[in-house]
Length: 142
Image (tube, rainbow, N blue to C red; front, side, top):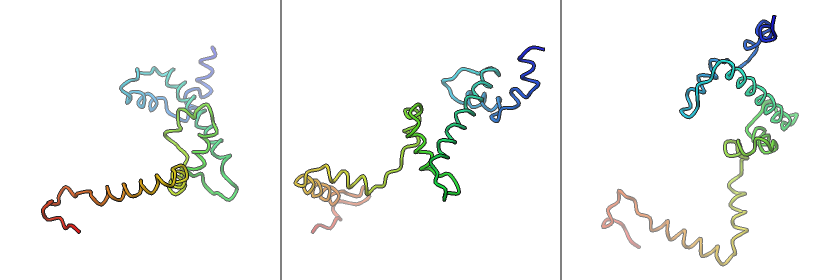
């Protein structure tokens, strides 16, 4: 019996968690991809399983003891820490940033004399915005 036959008898493709047919179907859904034969789909399935296992372990390491389940921040931190996949996933799973933190960072980088002028310009622009459904002749002016 050859090695390939032994692999199939021992579970081979059946031992994969991601079904080969589903991987082929996903590949067909991408208009830029070529059809996959069963062998290529099986290899892609196994590679995906290994990737997900490692990714899950990294995210799990970011969980503290008191957490009962993994959340977004654990996954985002795993992306940030795994340099090999950063360029692939950093736009899909970015670290969450609080709006107040971003605003305070922006405010701290703008000189104070420009900040007050910018605020006045923004307030002026907002106050002069016109509702497209509003008739300009009916608009109350102060």
